Image (cartoon, rainbow over the protein chains, first blue to last red):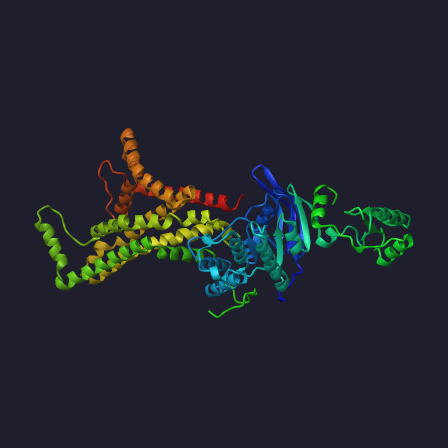
Length: 317
Length: 295
């Protein structure tokens, strides 16, 4: 584990952030704070995820509001700040006319590394991202997956404290996607680099992030931890029974006992919760035994990120 | 380089304080040197400079009084002209560097610098680092201009220094203005060409179309300059003629303003080139910003 500090200052603070492209308002007064760790920006296409990333990086000037990254106001310390962040854009991006490693060393130098260090780092990160064999080839000759990994290498080459990834697995095959997520996850877990990922691929966010912001039509619809977002109710239990009739019988009895009862995804499933405390396994078994029912499965009730995401967008979150 | 395991490691070394435009400048410069044709034209410029000094040295060794003999030959020709290796000779040399070296080099090196970056979306990679559109343009244009000066101004100044060191007393007075004239003329033309070519590349986004547009501009400017000048009976419209403009600027800075009737004025030509430079810079910055910062 790296000794990189998880700063006490928030990694990202937004206050009344408004971003406009001409008459179109892409972000409408965002207020949010990300203390550190890994954050997923979720939202349908056009929700404002990329605009938010680009505004944070200073690529777009906000019409109103303020952005603080690692405690620094973007308007005052933008250049110094950009030495501490790495950005993997959604579109392909590389320095033309030179080999992959030379282009990467060039970008590292621009971000403040000395010439020799920049070249060593360029080789290192290309090894790390699995592009060592291709490092002397022009990037224009790389495949889609290789270009994605090259963009990750470019974002990491100057060793940032915060890594911004915009659709990191775009266009990758399943194996390449898993490999990319592993690389990012290693950087996050083993080296303490803060991560901000914009994606419409929910499994990617579920794999990488602790915290989620859901954006829709330029507004922040929800900001919470992934754990809380996916938990149906704290301490709820999903009970699986042999048949739908058994599930109905258990639901009726549980309702009389003061449980809150919801239907599960399957007919033979029921979700039990208590408004005031966690549901204990033994009380579910006791109830089932009293009714002469056999419990086939019992586990904490959680909804998938996809369910949670849809509910938030539909206004149920 | 030692083998390194494929693992990520944090960087703990010292950070550089060099400005962000410096690596861009250096890479642009190196890219120029790596291009075969750019290298050939650069070597041509350096070879002309070196060849001229070798020639001067040889003549100096064989005929130490060659300068006096040259003057006598001029007087003896009976055409009333004085043949001297003075500022006038440097004007001829300047033209030799201006057209066969500076012009093709500016096109060969400049045509794909920003167009290439636009094609590979490199601007996004630059601007998410401590690089602003100004720094980027400064790095690219500064390197292009330095390259042009290396291939033209440096050999010319080398000739001047050699000439001065081997000439008799009093020769300095005849070539005193030369370094200023060479520098001002080449710098103004170099800046104008660097910015104009790069502005065009942002418009066309293609090296081929930029080269064609430049050829059209150079040739078309002669036609339109002639047309406007004859319609309005105003010779200053000839500042629009590209090659005539370059000539007038070189003549003026070297101390030989062409005051023949029907030729464009020196000041008007300088103002025109400065105007083209400013407009190109403004357009270049706007396009660069729009390409990478919005969308």
